[in-house]
Image 1 (spheres, rainbow, N blue to C red):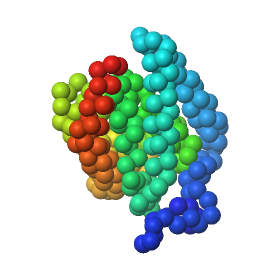
Image 2 (cartoon, one colour):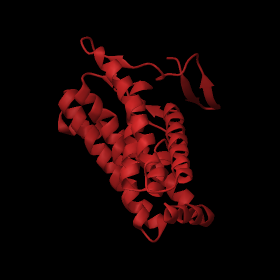
Image 3 (tube, rainbow, N blue to C red):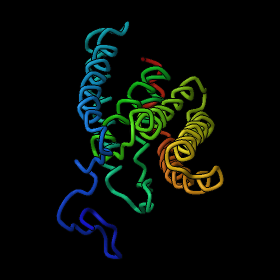
Image 4 (cartoon, rainbow, N blue to C red):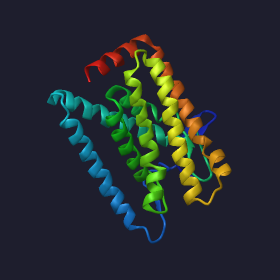
Length: 231
């Protein structure tokens, strides 16, 4: 199996990025690929437009767009580094949800959901498994959009409390969507889908721990909280 793998002495390279461009589309749904590509570009333009026409000045909008792009890129890179991968999809990563979750915390619920949804669409392009458009939505954009619920934490007086309250909620919401997809489209019963998709919870716990450690740093928490107050 080619790709980036975790060995005892670190990461080893075996020929190509596993997942990049490795999208699988069932026969009869090839047109979905073009639709996804178009949707991805439309969402990116919508994201830029949404941030550009915010009530802030142009300088602030440019900063928001730049931060959104950086967070999506960082999460995408981290998503490719798989510490463990399930036989039927799903993987544990070194905190791939952290960058987009921090964006949601800084910029709030609406912008957070939009950025996380856009990230989910890009995940399809980086190596999605597509049966039909509805399944694609339930496996990628919608569950990742749930991470945007971390934006609710921005109203908390203590950042660490907000993160530890709403990040778990976001992860559980993502988990529920994946469970539904497993039952509806992959022929699994509820018990199997609940158990198999616990990989999402493990991945989420890692992300929560990393984010909590970041916000436990007073300088980091103060800087982020200060920026939240300016948004």
